[in-house]
Length: 163
Image 1 (tube, rainbow, N blue to C red):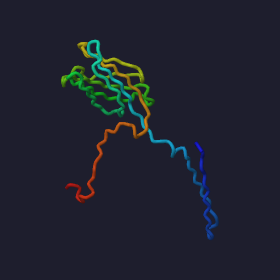
Image 2: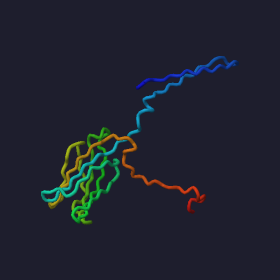
Image 3: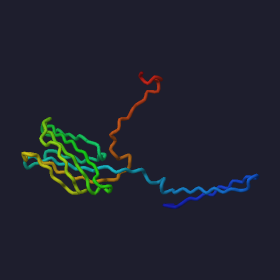
Image 4: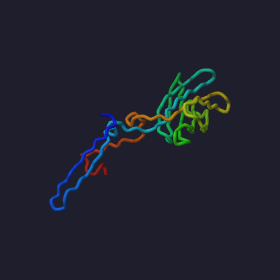
């Protein structure tokens, strides 16, 4: 019974005040659809010279800076990325990127306005490194969305909570 409305009529018989009717409607399609939220789907490729040295494909929350790192051939590659929506639909996005190689900043944080789903390339000032970024707004079930929250474990056997 997809998208049907279930209506129940509840009749209360009150001998002194007469009869009153109350109608309650429920939509069973609301209960069957999982909760969703929008995240930024980001693909990054770091290119040095003519070869790709690192790549990532991640989902992240809008507005939250995320640090991504890889160790390849004895070198530590780290990218800091943050994505925000420029428009409510998520068709225009603002991406902030920074890149470090072995702990040294190679690409200072740069901001680029990107169309969703289009690849954009950001280059270091000296041309030694380029980062290709593709980003889009994506709706996912809440269970699949990134979780950047700290889960607190409360010890119920300690009534003072460690105080």
